Image (tube, rainbow, N blue to C red; front, side, top):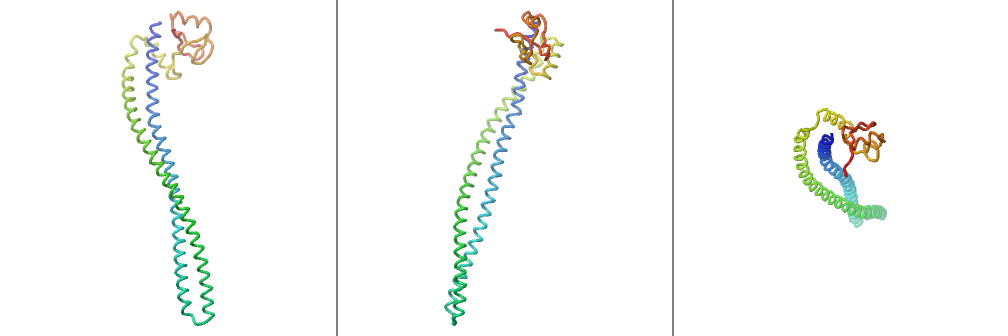
Length: 234
């Protein structure tokens, strides 16, 4: 029976590696998906910043147009003042002139303020674009690494899956069925017993059952989790 246990442990070691490879087959592509999702979120933030910059630029242009209109009206009023013949007309034009000068000053102040805002937001957008570019470079580099790793994983996985049947040689069929039954429900199906406890479920093992593990004359199961128990050799 000791030989049977040894063969089962070899099979289990094989299956543990297969499960590790199965996890890698899933986790490696997910890593890239996660990285791409993160960059996608940054691109959404960038788009909002670009939209905001566009709105500020639109408002700045509107204020610049209003400023140009005010300056044209100021020039027109100055030309008209040279042609007036009455004091009343001169007074009215002077009043309009002051109004447009005031408006022009307000628009000029707003334009200068918006130019500062645009400059700051352009810096933010440029910084974000550089950040995204850097992240994409990281993603593409990691993607190439993962593709190479996945190729190695798939090759090893295919090899191990093909070898599994060979490991059944020399193991009792009923024992293989028991192993597979347990493996499907609580992996690993074979666990060492230590200090009269099952290391699978941490429950205590009756002394007589624990001592029988040293003889290795029969398969000993944990009375609580049904895993196959063995003693690790030093």
